[in-house]
Amino acid sequence: MEDRIQKAVELFRSGYNCSQSVVAAFADMYGFTQEQALRMSASFGGGIGRMRETCGAACGMFLLAGLETGATEAADREGKAANYAVVQELAAELKKRNGSLICGELLGLKKKEPVSTVPEERTAQYYSKRPCAKMVEEAARIWSEYLEKHPK
Image (cartoon, rainbow, N blue to C red; front, side, top):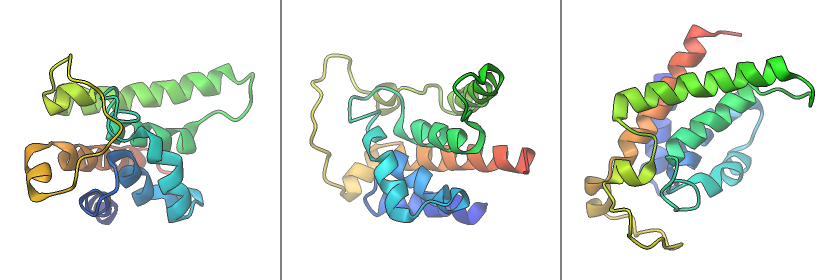
């Protein structure tokens, strides 16, 4: 699992968004290609579409939780509840370790800063001023820990 955690960080450092990095590091476990994983998680970067809402690394972890435990029958209330319990457990752990699940808070942004659709250029300064690589690592680690506690 440590290799998957490091793969997630490497994907982020190579330019993929936080959500893509987490999902792509585990996608093969669920039968997805790298391209499928990158596409399905693309919209969640930057706190969902760069809106600075829920952390993209967390969203990636939640997407994986759906692949692992998501209900597939519309009337399966018990299955839905079980999946939501997993998501809430994962969210609580990420929040405990980092203080928030909100991208803007993790980045220390002011509330009134305008939202832009344009991602920042990935430079050494970009990586040094942001906790995103750490969030990607944390989300991948928490997911790995979850899988180790709940083997199939």
